[in-house]
Image 1 (cartoon, one colour):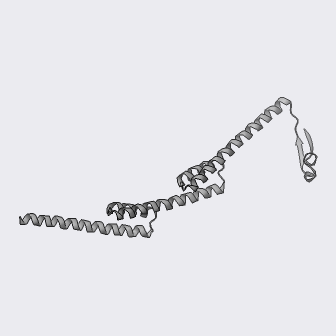
Image 2 (image 1 turned 60 degrees about the vertical axis):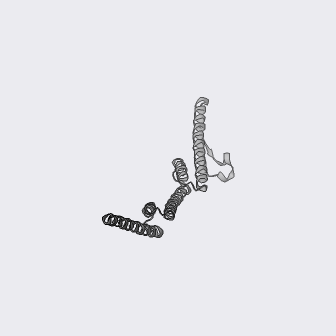
Image 3 (image 1 turned 120 degrees about the vertical axis):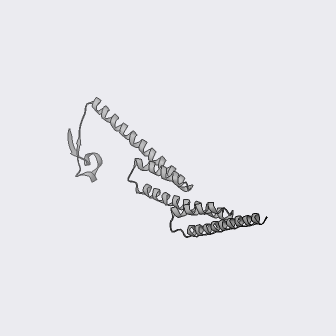
Length: 170
């Protein structure tokens, strides 16, 4: 074991840094060196996994593939759990997925109304309402579809009543 100052190895700005050098037999040194190299390979492999997951998450995010972005970002967090930028990417992707789900259901409701499919429209607006309880368009759509369904039920009842009267008159 040898003691010294880091200035002897690193230069003058390390003058107050003590060092300890331990001399080992060649076989023991080779075992230590191999262990260090193996550890470095593991760190490098984790770094590659992390970088690949981040790249895939960012690519999915740019395609508006929110589920893919979340999945890949969560893979990255398994390697480096404390990465706040990846946690933020997940949070943003979850918000975007929620907004997309609301918009998809709203569009489904609008399309069903346009096709006079009132039961489907009401179901789509209820889906929006479940995701976003205070969503004004969904509430209005539920009321419109419900009004139309009641009107159609009343119309159907009047038709049946007229048919009964017609049969009685014959």
